[in-house]
Length: 328
Ligand code: TRP
Image (tube, rainbow, N blue to C red):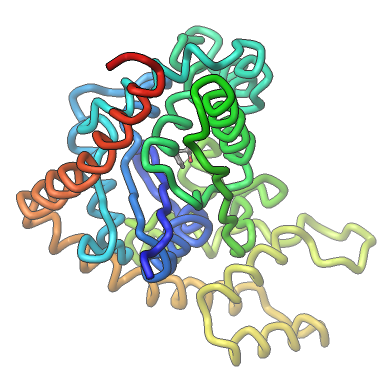
C-alpha cells in the first residue's frame, strides 16, 4: 500500500527550544514511518520578519542539522529548503488570485505580527498564509502536522482548495491537521505564558544549550510566587512536573509527585534531577549535531537531493494545476 503524503515546514529563526522539540519535531520523527513525509525549511516565510542576510545561509543549514540530529532521516523522508523550489512561489501567485483579501486580514497571526512589527507590515506578512497553502497543496497531501497556532492557516488552505475546485474542476482533496499530543510547555521565567523565543533566552531551554546552561536555567525557574492561599499547584511547579514527565523516567516522576503531596518536596532537588534528565536526552542530539557541523557538505547534499525529489512531484502537480487554469 502506498503511504499517504504528509507535508510540514519550520522557519529558520535561530534557537529551537524544547517546546518546539516536544511539540513539533518529536512528532515529525515519529510520523516518518507512517507517512511519505515532505519536511522543509520555510526560508521564504521567515523573510516576513526582518532577517540578517549575512547569517541566513548559516541559519538555514543549522536548522537542517537540528532536524537531522533529532532524527529526521533522509532515507525515510524528503528534507529540503522551500526557496530551492520556485514552484512554491509560482503556486502562491496562482492562489493569490483566488484568495479574498478579507480572509487574510482576519488571520490571527497576521493581526498579532502586524501589531508587533508596526514598522514592517509588509505584503508578505499578509500573504503568508497563501504561501503556506501553496507549500501544502503543491504536494496534494492527506495530512499536515501543525501546532494550534497554525490551524487557521490550514483551514485557509482548504478554503483555497475548494475555491480552486469550484472554478477549475475537482483537483484538491481536503487536508487534515495532525495535532501533536505533547503538552504545552510554559516559560521558565513567566510560567503563565507559553515557552517562546520572544520572552528571552532564560525562559526556554534550547536544544543547543550546554549542560551548564541547562542547569542554570532550570535551577532559576520560577516555582511558587509566594503563598497564594490556594491549594492548587502553581503554574511554575506544574510546568516542572510536565517537564519531568517528558524527560525523566516514571519512578522519578512518582517520587516527586508523592513528595509534593506529602509536602516534603524540595524544589531544588526536583530541579537538579530534572536538569540532569534534560541533559541526558539532549546530549546525544547535540553529539549528532556536532558531527554534522563538521560535515556541512553532507548536509548540503541531503538538502539538494531532497529538493530534487520534491521537485519531481511539485512540477507534475503544478503542471496539472496550470492546465486546469488554462495557463498551458
Ligand atoms: N507557518 C508555519 C509555522 O510557523 C511554518 C510553515 C510554513 C508550514 N509553511 C508550512 C507548516 C506548510 C506546515 C505546512 O510553524
